[in-house]
Image (tube, rainbow, N blue to C red; front, side):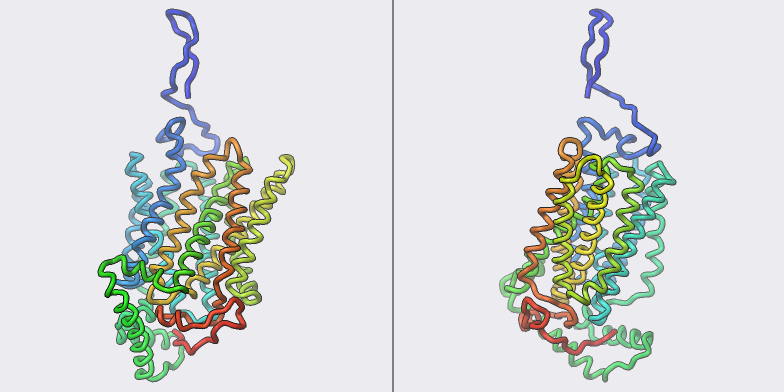
Length: 461
């Protein structure tokens, strides 16, 4: 960017580059953009600021799943929660762009274990009929947080204090960690049977139920462990490094199909969810109201999932969510400029249905992938969602000034692709979670819920 300045000697106007800028402070007193002058040749750093967090989640997803499967869900949750809390609060007072971006990256790497592994832990201890309920409850808190963030941003217009205040609640997680146990499913798979029994006894006491005889439980755990060891030995002959754990996700037809389809769908749903949340500038609407509404529409989106999944099942729910998202987003660019309210309504419907897809697909993939590789499987597929979320701010930055309608077109077509990709997978409603790859391969899976396997007896925690 440059300006015209009169030359004192020649009395002519000459073009000189800008070295300082005045920012509009009517919305925010200070922002990362204004404080670090992220304009003109540094404008790309604005999208990078958002992208670094998602790039961190992408990187974290690649190894956090392996660590959770090797060292346990609870251990990784404790470590990541502590690091996340300290980094989130401390990053508000960094004074250089490189350090700020580094902190954003570190926060991103701690995001998957503190959120995703926690989700896995909850799903692994729930009986089938309660998985979707607990999944909805967990992600509904995200919706309320989005609305609260909009309120905090309205009240606190300086980015450093805003970052500090919204990060302080992370400290609440630390004492709550002492109230939960390790996943008994994981303990059974890795051979820590006595520890698993201890967790089951505590769960039975809290729920006032009677466990089966301990010898029966130990026998079930031993079978699960032997299945896992049998699969591991066949692969360990070929692979003797950490990559073995990831390659298990491509070792059979069923697990390979799950991995490919879910990675693609998670990439698309991540781009949709975060892209539509950050799309206020492309529509030219009030930022605070847009973010508050985008958080508000997530609440009915998550709560209506319970009856919808009971009627249609996991698979059809995800497909319907993607399809409606595609329809409304492809329709939005056709709305005349003077009907901006209708345009926003369509975008919000797209956000609501993409939220449905995001929540239901999280439960769906948890029921598809065996316990043996569940963390690394979700880590890899969630890396796809982080890739999509990483792409979203750069896509918006590229089109928001010249072709704002293109955002809806790209997102709509992507949702349509995700919808079609799910067709080869099978329904998982009311079936037991597979514990090993051998267990998965032994399941009869069809395209309709009526042809799927019947639920086996499960240990209820």
